[in-house]
Length: 245
Ligand code: PGA
Image 1 (cartoon, rainbow, N blue to C red):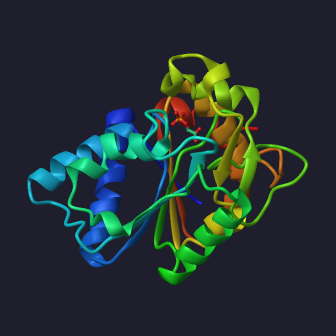
Image 2 (image 1 turned 180 degrees about the vertical axis):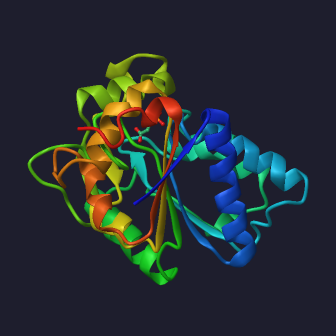
């Protein structure tokens, strides 16, 4: 894993935005895997600004988001689809037909997961996957536990994850859906290139366990150690325990 430590979260945001626009320039039909959460928001704002300044042509790119809540549809204000619309999609020239999302309101959620895997495959696979990391070490909604699932699947969310997502649901964790759909660990590991971003002292522990520790289902992000092209972009606060166990 390549670890890049930058002075502050602003520089992390700029670095992530730069990685994405460089990839778009090199490969205009880039298949980009995207993440929600607070960490990439500033990078998405930066990408919108860059696009306004003619830096970043998204017209031929495709996107696949990592995950979505179950039981709500794409128009629900708490959905990740709306989050992405607000923070990124409405500010760049993506073709709406190339924006791909898991449908949390599908009648058959297992079939929806299979459809998503197939759609990624049909698009030629993900070229660049952006990841955040939960303070419990999750990536996407692959939560710590005794096992990890390879394919896109349904997930029962842990209480800490529902608390973390409460701001999207009127600050009430009980309003956060109990279930979600998520790309699996295998889906993520098949991306040709991965950039994970983490900022702030609260991420120092899970980052240390991801990069220094053993590969363990209790730390889902630790599986990234086996991927040949992973960069971890950190601010100083998130990096303080890297190299120490
Ligand atoms: P955060 O979430 O960026 O809001 O910390 C990351 C995640 O849970 O994957």
